[in-house]
Structure formats: C-alpha cells, structure tokens
Length: 221
Image (tube, rainbow, N blue to C red; front, top):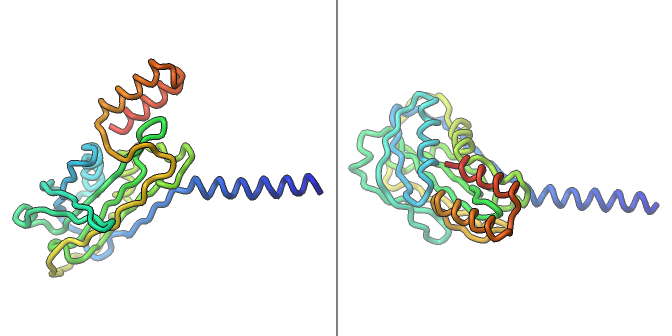
C-alpha cells in the first residue's frame, strides 16, 4: 500500500511538472489567398534576427516581402501597429510581428506572435503564436530564428486570390509575463554577453554553464 501511494504521488507530481513546462503554439493557416508581395511593418524593439527569419520564411514560399517602418503601441494589453499607408501601397497583404525575451540563466524568446491581414488591414487572414511564458523547463531555450521560420512555414499555404476592403489593422493581445524570469526587456547581444561574462567572473556560474549559455545567446543572433 505504501508503495502504491508513493507511485500515485509520483504520478501526480510528474503530471503537475509536465503541465508547468507546457509551451503553447497556435497556428491559423493562410487559406483565403496567396499574396505576391507582403509588406512587413518593422518592430524596432525586437531583435533584427526575427525580421530576417520572417523574410527567410516567406522567401522559402516564393513570396516577396517589403519592409516598412512603423511602431507598435500597447494599449489595454493589446498591440496596435502604427504606420504610413503610403508605405504599404501596392502590397497584397500586411504582416505584423512582436516577440519578447526574458532572462533565466540566459536570455530566451518566451513569446512570439506573427499575424497577417489583407492589404488594407481590415481582416486577419493568418496568425502564428508561440508562448513559452509558463514553461519552467529547459524546453523554453529554443533557437529564436529557427522557431520563427517554423512559425512562418506552418502559417503559409497556397490558395486563390481575393479582394477585401477596410480601414485599420487589427490589434493582437499582448502576452502575460513569463514564469520565473527576472527581466522582460530585449537587450542586444553585446549586453547579454557582457552580463554573462560578469556572472562567470564572479563565480556565480560554472565554466560549463557559461559556455552553454554563451552558445545559446550566439545561436539566437
């Protein structure tokens, strides 16, 4: 009986741990039309590598992209892209993206959201969301560029063309803060490497931990 109770307790603990390590990924595939050129509204607050990975993903599907300047304003837990309509003239669709990093021995991407609308921004036609904010395991340390390419690849699909009208791009919800993190900003790679070097010099992390986390930071570039 004691062994049975211990096994039952172990099963409950294991199920709780697995639930706590869950990473969620939701994809809404592009089904309404296949654009020839997509205007990507750049988010200057996100690592440059994310934009490059998005462009690589579209290039793999033979879809041209054009990058335009813009800002992403967060209001009431929603992101609202702001950009000039003249910059997106001639594009068949608009693409928006946000991504967040945090710290847990190394900086890692805990959230990314990519969404596409029709040319005037009135209708959302595809979306890919990655959320590891509740993941407390090592599975949250993904290579950001590879994950972004994967999201874009899963989102895109070949379908007929279409025509819609409207006024403004739809906002998307901002993520909740990640579990067990110390910061939620997005510093550049140089700053992250300097912080890691400082921890190593102070003896707060071992040589093997330093090498592994340094590689993790470099892999995200």
